[in-house]
Length: 303
Ligand SMILES: [Zn+2]
Image (cartoon, rainbow, N blue to C red; front, side, top):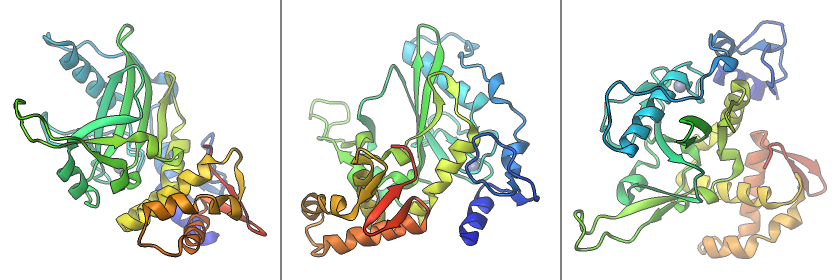
């Protein structure tokens, strides 16, 4: 337990002070101060959710929206990976990513939309997306919903890059021969297949979510970065099963109900039950679920 606490403390750049963490909503419940978090000077109540009018006229609505939304992120968002108070913008037209953190080097791709996102999001070239899955510069995905009538941010969800596995990236049909980029194969990101644990709200219904909560939620699943793509795929599948139960508490027998579906997905694995138990152990060791004994478990995040 002590080692886990030390790891989480190191992850938020905290230090032991003999005092309780001063942040509201901090679930670490240690006698620490999360140094980086309390160093953040901006108070969440000061955030202006309205977009700034661009300096020069833009001829299309989508160009204007892009300038507005990117400017807002540059003005107000922090890095959820290391709590650096500012994100830096890449020069325009940089492929794949839009922002980076100068402190931890994580990259972020921003997708913004008037209204809410569906369960699939069109993304870049399929081959490139798959190739980048395991690379250090694969970007985290930031989804911003805004209201164009009031020119205000409504919701921002970030999906950490460690939640991306090949099964989340769908191949789209090649573009028609008559298209300008005939034969080009794009991708869809199947957001609906990402567990709730990997959809982290930064802004919810026009309110900034407490950054302690955000960083803690982010750090809780950071261990997925150390997994192979196959291992990550298994853990995400098991997380999705755990979230599908009506209550936080569940049994191993309930998990075994997913054996037929998982066997179909992993036809080469002939001991799916053992694989499920192994994944539950990994999640337990990381503090994501708790083992209650006699085949009973409880998940520790809200689904
Ligand atoms: Zn960072």
